[in-house]
Length: 282
Ligand code: SF4
Ligand code: SF4
Ligand SMILES: [Zn+2]
Image (cartoon, rainbow, N blue to C red; front, side, top):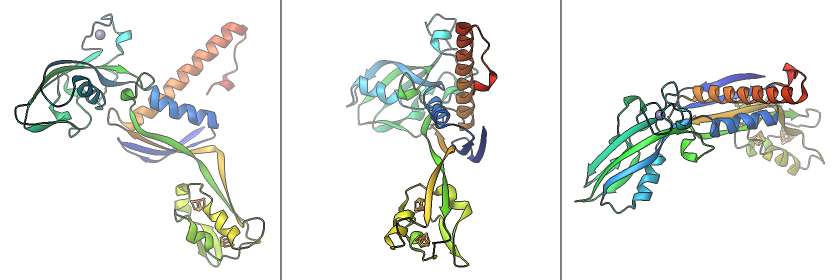
């Protein structure tokens, strides 16, 4: 199994996973979405709210604000030594006190821990009119997307199979109809031969419009171009919501899978009494 990055920065990554099964690709996708812990606001104490929005809606909006999460500092409450009472190791506290007229933004949440600020400063929370006021205290805790979508570290996380384009040169007359139909500019004619534009192959969406265009040209029963999906190669696109760098999301998801795999091997070994071959581990 191999991972080759096409693009990688703090916010987004595009990479090719090779030598994996469709099951593993989906496991990685799901682990990145729902098994990597982040901070999100869970409890809100509202001291004053004279805005047009109910307390519950206000708390819901606060919960959806992504928060920078350093998992070397914070642990889930269930694992904390404070016995779920709430302490600086499992809880990040914010205060917000704003009077209208003005829009309240995520930057108005003042954190006790400067390392756990909202990931984006300009997320609008509510518009206050003259004389309206909000005063509250919010507590963020660590959990995962499995519990609630507000703890997902990704805004986009998906994959597609790597495209395989086969051209039957024996019947292709380089008429170019498939090129006109391709929405991604993947095909070209050079030296009177139909070819794939190499650097655009990964943009192919497997839509098969090229096959249909070829068939509509009355070339016969079979198109001269065939599009297939490589069942062992996957192009992933992952975007972070800003709570942590996208590389950390990928690494933590892979560690999660490794740990689950090790746990399963341990249980199977216990049940069968026979050491499970290393080969079956991911
Ligand atoms: S439409 Fe068919 S015959 Fe024409 S260039 Fe494309 S593959 Fe070749
Ligand atoms: S499958 Fe769609 S995107 Fe891919 S080469 Fe054919 S027309 Fe273009
Ligand atoms: Zn604690």
